[in-house]
Length: 101
Image 1 (cartoon, rainbow, N blue to C red):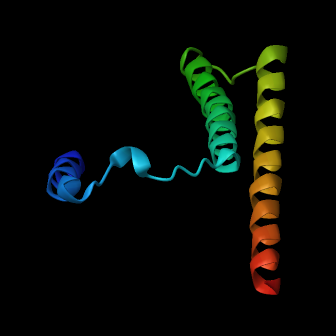
Image 2 (cartoon, helix red, strand yellow; image 1 turned 180 degrees about the vertical axis):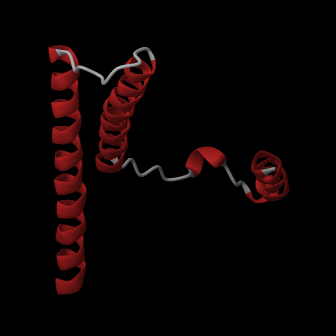
């Protein structure tokens, strides 16, 4: 729908020398990096939860955590803490910066 709308707009304003290539592109690397890090951290945390659920379902007894699974769990906790510190810190910095300006 949006592509069709843009195509129609380009056709109508082509008469006044409008060009899509004249759009100004503003790349924002910070938000892209934050998204990718969130995606990676989320993948680690969710895959740990899936692994625990998988290994728990394969045994009728209480799950005995292997050393690798324990390290994975600790890494997940570290990632969650880091993510909260990074996102919370960015939120506080941006709020203070916007409040002072």
